[in-house]
Image 1 (cartoon, rainbow, N blue to C red):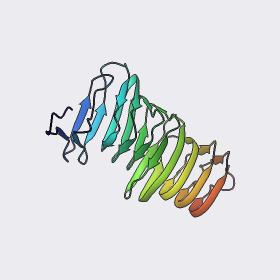
Image 2 (image 1 turned 30 degrees about the vertical axis):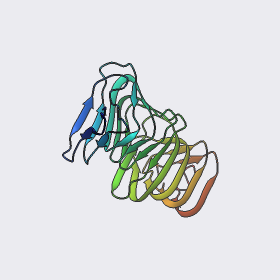
Image 3 (image 1 turned 120 degrees about the vertical axis):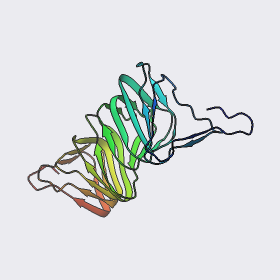
Image 4 (image 1 turned 90 degrees about the vertical axis):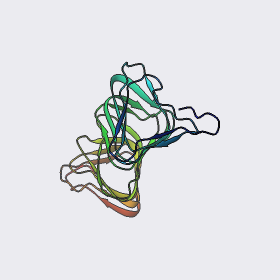
Length: 219
């Protein structure tokens, strides 16, 4: 959106659950520094390009965001701040080394390429889900004071996990880390008898709570 002279163009998705579906390729959404982009509440931006030519996702704050195009790569142009839910329905979401902040749920039914970026769950209320799909993550941070996240559908493989605030419940799924596990204020629950926690690096609990699986499981 171009804003000529002193006039500022505005895109306001309001608070009525509107979905803006972008079918353009490469750069379907451009947010100029002089423009106002208001996501409202319960709104969604859906990237669903007509062709699999690659899409750049601009750094911005979104409410719900969805990526849906098989064989297409959606590459972040900067920090992705999601106040609602993030959904990869199909295609590949590549961070390009950028971080992702998610307030509510994260669902991966496609491919997630972490590019050494960090995914931070920073909700402050409510119960939410985290389905990592079949993709490996780099650093995962649980930093949502007052929010509870539950691992669903798929095991979580990552380089590291830090629980600073809030709760991550592994339910009956597994956690595999190639690096370190740090609990420094948050709660990590792996008490289900079917859950395994495998950490190649160090396990540090400086504050907060780590509930390990039953003795028969790997810890």
